[in-house]
Image (cartoon, rainbow, N blue to C red; front, top):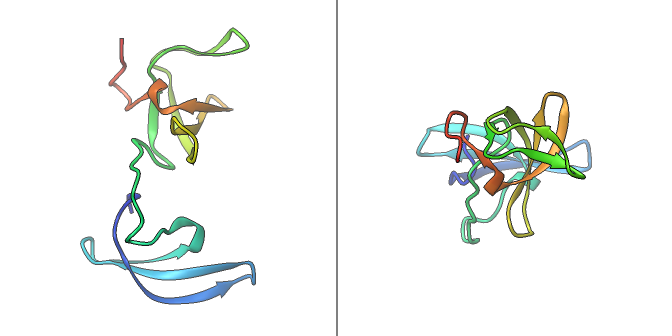
Length: 116
């Protein structure tokens, strides 16, 4: 299910006493999923869409470096492992060749859509 999809809570239950899990029906896709509370927001809350989500394949839109040392070349493909919201700009935790990097959204592109 893509983030931002609208669904309706059908029921809820506790999970391991630490987390509430909701069974959500996504009518447009006619899909019923169990979703942890942390993955849901109210349908009336403002939605800030990000370009990518967990599991998406991305490519570096530019070379990436740590302390001035190049670690990822432009066009190198990685996988989104997490999204970091709350700050501006939106950033992602991306796995490139076994290394997790925090990368701003502007430094990423869909694979094959490398920016100049």
